[in-house]
Amino acid sequence: MLTVTLACVGKLKERYWREACAEYEKRLGAFCRLQIIEVAEERLPDAPSPAQITAAIEAEGRRLLSHIPAGASLIALCIEGKEMPSEALSKQLSSWTVDGVSHVALVIGGSFGLSEAVKREARLRLSFSPMTFPHQLARILTLEQLYRAFHIASGGKYHK
Image (tube, rainbow, N blue to C red; front, side, top):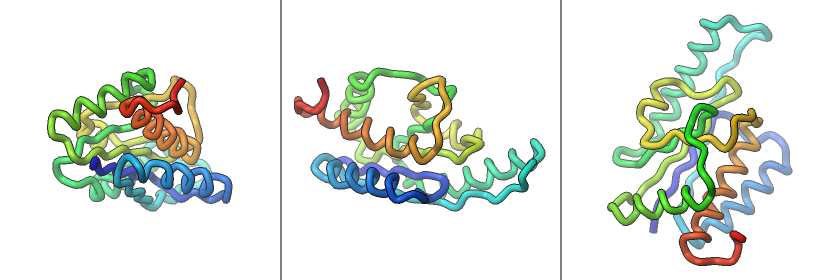
């Protein structure tokens, strides 16, 4: 069974986000071993300088990468990533598992994005849209798309 690690900057603060996350964790249990890791978000002043933002992104990136197991296929979720339909994501994940990949790690950055170090390590840079979403919503979107991808691969009825 494929192991999936979802490494995220920050915690889900509102109950509705936590409940949505828990629902998809439960659903995904039929398809993979899921591990969600939350790393601390860097604290910044109200009006951070570009240098402060860069330093924060780099620190968050180091924390994220420290939780990615060696040999895992890394997917960086970033706005400049490749957009793909759900079927293509499903096909990509299935292809990797056929090729012997046993661990996939997805990474979601904080409100200022992902470090270049994380993006360089990624086997795939993925974007859900050119629009910007709160990182809490990005986590739920990621879990839903994983669930959809597994259903597509198994011929399930969830994806229409």
